[in-house]
Length: 220
Image 1 (cartoon, helix red, strand yellow):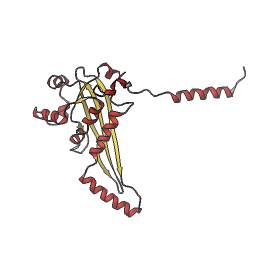
Image 2 (tube, helix red, strand yellow):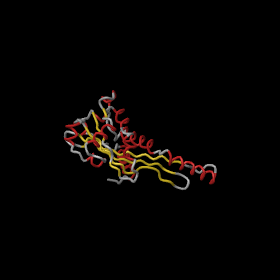
Image 3 (tube, rainbow, N blue to C red):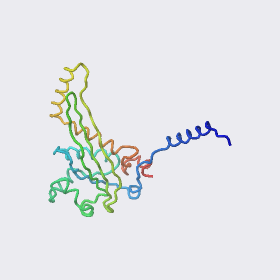
Image 4 (cartoon, rainbow, N blue to C red):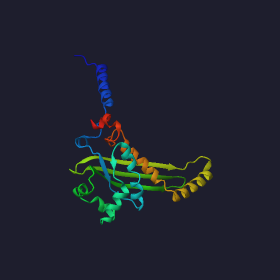
């Protein structure tokens, strides 16, 4: 049989085209589907940064995206106060409480554990970046099974070189003074949480209190 290079090349191109169009496997929601939660308790995050205020600034941004996704979220300030009143003064100790104790006393369907990896401003000569990076795990209270995990990451930059070097230096100086009096991390954390929870491929499936949850393919 005669060798047909054109036919071989055509076949190879077809194979490459099919593989290039194939969809990458998405997040595995099987554990979530087996026991989808209705209520979530959010514990204060473990802080792996030097910013001492980060945990409580961050936790104030968590409730809204979870509630908008369709879950009942226990009031984070009430949970924090309750834990402290019972001899657990810091997030690491709060996150070490056994799930069966949390289930018996508070009764959530799932607990969200978070860890802050990056937080705050990084200054350069003509600009600054505000970065928030957090990792999250949603654990079933009854079984201890991981229902979902995600990462929140957002960066907001400031400063530019328009108007010449002197103008840029002045703008950067003013911007950094403003940053020290009004930390942008709160708003950046809000965006990070929205990115994490609402991602259509890897985010948290819509909960039962969101009317669109019945059509969410991640729950099917």
